[in-house]
Amino acid sequence: MAFGFFKKNETADAIFMGGNIFTQNSELPWAEAVACKDGQILAVGDYEDLSELEGKHTEVIDLDGKFMLPGYIDTCGHPVLQAYQDSCLFLQVGDLADTLNQISEYAAANEAAEIIFAFGYDEAILNGFDPEQVRELLDKTCKDKPVVVLGKSGFHCFVNTTAMELVRAAAEEDEIQAVTLSYILGILEPIDLSTVPEAIPDSMGNYCERGFTSVFDCGAPDLFASLYQNMMVHLYQEGMMKHRFHGSLLINHDVNPKAVMYKLSQFRTNCAELNGYVNFKTLKLLVEGSEEALSISGESLRDLCMEAGDKGFHVHIDALGAAAVAEALDAMSAIRSAGYKKNTLILAHDPVSDPEELTNTCCYLNIIETSPTGGLSGDSWRCIEHAANIEEAVDMLTINAAIQLGLDSGFGSIEKGKHADFVIFDENPLEAGSMAAFKKIQAAMTVIDGKIVYDAEEDDRSQWYSMLTMQQY
Image 1 (cartoon, rainbow, N blue to C red):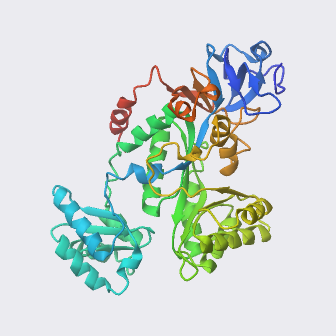
Image 2 (image 1 turned 135 degrees about the vertical axis):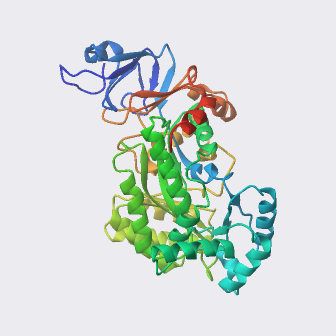
Image 3 (image 1 turned 30 degrees about the vertical axis):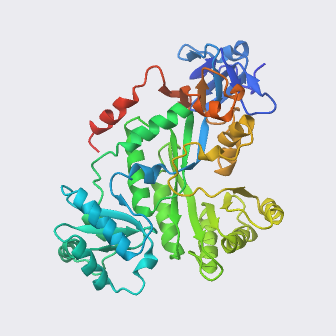
């Protein structure tokens, strides 16, 4: 029987049939066919019933006994920062002397570069130094070309004299009275906007092979988030999106909440007409430290959360340390107490002394508890690292992932009315002999909105970079 009623004269754009379809719907766990129309699931059931939806323009895809599941959703990825790792120097933790030494070594190894760009210093290393002192020290490191160094917050930078002179000249010409960070980065353009990072098509290919149709980025500073979103828009316009992208803006220190909401609103507006392929709806907050000093103060954390709740953004907090967890719970409680019920709240934290109390609080607040996403982990399956078995891993990749990202009304299961996002395997992932074997199973196809976007037999991922660079970006 078909799960989902349909009009007598309604026809599908595509029908996938002849396979084993694991729906993640308890009322119909397995099906033989699924019909799609306008990017959504029209009906699920037996092909004999769904054949009534077949019209002269309907594409019928024979799964030939393969296994279809809801498209996997990565909740722990860092595609944004990983895409730009080779485009600049990602600084290691250290004091100002260590930072300058890293920049010196990088400049020596990149003599042909027109500008030296480094990212990721802790702003605290500049305490006790005035801007002129820092600039003089940076000049000694590299003076013959512009150098710009962006802090890990993305809201602070320092530059050498050569770079400052370029900015001052541009400001005079543009009659700019107050030079902002955005203006500095816009003038210097530390990352070449005309280039396509090779990591992007490579990342897309890796996600396709593993069966992901949606990817959540666990937070990047404004500069990188903006660059990546622009690239995703470009991919969408060129018809080369291989997975949906869900971005988030990372905040890891006290900042004006109004300014943050303005930036998030800009990101969200830029995605308005991209059919859900590119999204930006999440504020990512990283809170770490002790009771004496948190990277984001309790007051600022609550203000940021309340503003996000008011503007309809989801809030994900990585809380490192007991004090950070307590402040995060307080801020999230404030969101719910203010009546904001539709925002998804995620709390990721290190182990705490009283997990039962925390769990009860999280349930009361409707907060999903998970583990901190950490830095640029090389583990491509980080999102299921705590799965007890394969069944739980599949849940974490589908229905639970959709709930965690606030997407469960349209994703995570194969049901009438949801988006037609699927992954198709030659073998049944649920019957893999071990978690290691499960992770090695590669997708035969991935489908977004009822259209095949990746076919392992036909796609040559090595050509994707060439196809992108042939376009004028």
